[in-house]
Length: 182
Image (cartoon, rainbow, N blue to C red; front, top):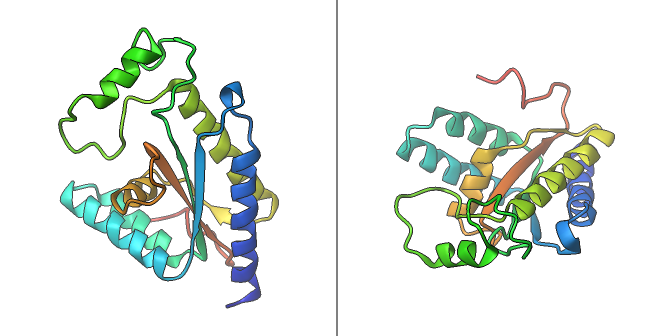
């Protein structure tokens, strides 16, 4: 392990801390995190590749290469089925009780994320992801927020109970591997 990759692992933990301490709606924390390294990066990349091939989504294959080349990857997910109990209607239902009932209905299709989701919780997820990548930036660690990596993580059953997950692969190198991608 190089000093740079060791530092990236430390920053990944600091990013998880930033996600944990980010503001949450009504002060209720529904965020989950995990840091992947070594063989777990390959496992995630393989799951992303399989999903991309099955659904003809080429960007999943491109993103899988980035995950494989990363020094670490932070997963940030949210238990979006847990409502804020404010009946705001932003989820598409008039009440939180109606949204919760819709969660129990049989699901059709193979959507990669589970729903419906509480809009307050999804906002919390966005704030947590933003806080985490801010921490990476402060420490000069290259990163990219990946929807595809979150889908791969869910197909592997990582971050159990989370309805939506994002992956943030991290790398310290002379050139940012997450941009100018083909």
